[in-house]
Length: 474
Image (cartoon, rainbow, N blue to C red; front, side):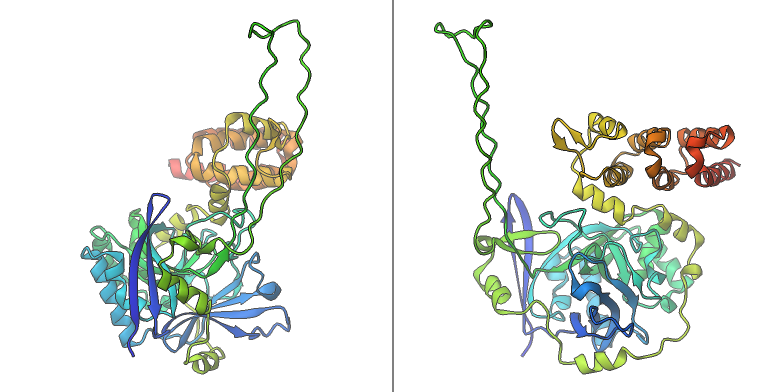
């Protein structure tokens, strides 16, 4: 029996959301838990696999009994030698259809038939071609290591906030990179509306199914890497209802209706705070980028989610499990890529910046001045966090992502304040990314030459920044 793929666009708070249901899918692309395959001896870690066909492609080691707030250890699986012809053709056909003007539902139909049963959403979004820490993604996962931003629930963003994943994990080994193919994609990316196809993996990271060479070209040519994103909708959520603030009490007035200046104003009685209301049951189901209430789901799609399973082991799981012990040949590093690509990757936004951008809507100058004075509250409300150090870190990341000029001013003000010395080193490393800022150059130059004790922790970073700035000016 062939896969049954249905799509429907729903209206959600004035925005269109594409939903796609898959029934009797081939389960040739997806994720599944593989049990305790980590050989470190820890009984609290579980392994989750992203697979394509009969090959495990990405290995995620989930610590703390797969705690959703814990980042994963991620690595490219050993022994993977490429897609099966059927899957390769499906990815290529979908990629071509999207760039020929087909809708997401029509263009991705061949890929949806290869997925596990369930309900998915698809949309377009720009991605950064890194692992979330300034390393170009293609060769950034040769060794299993903890990757920031791979937790399903970010402590900084919060559990109720939606977000769009924006970092990449490869599904092809770097052995596949060839300069000849890259020359071809250098020209092609100029005319593509869709540069890649990704499948959401975990947290802020997605697996790149199609477009690896294009990612190299887009990075080198400063072209936005726009991807068609596939996310599986699995997680139930419950909206907490917060009480509305009571209206202000009217000022007392005299008999003729005018307020008396001589009358002593008695303080209005303070009403006890209304309790937060947590409804019974769930409000709906969600993926990282969208929260859909139960009443907004088409009935047949809601039934698939409720009656199905979040993940299940595909029929080829014994083969996947056996291939996990394959010994990898010598890994190829990112050094085979153009140096300009690696350099530009270091300057892209990282996970901390993205998390801070989602956690904070805006920061006024008054709030920043409060932080500079060592206060974490403004007008009786917490600005960012009750923890001062965490507030400074998050505010810096937010400004660096959203407002470079204010970020430079805020960073200099922090590093110039000896009372905030605990944050100096972190802020200096952040500010060092603005390599072309003359204002930062002058500040760091004065700090190096002045020898003031309050700059002690930033001197190594300042010296490096000054040297780089001079080299660029030559």
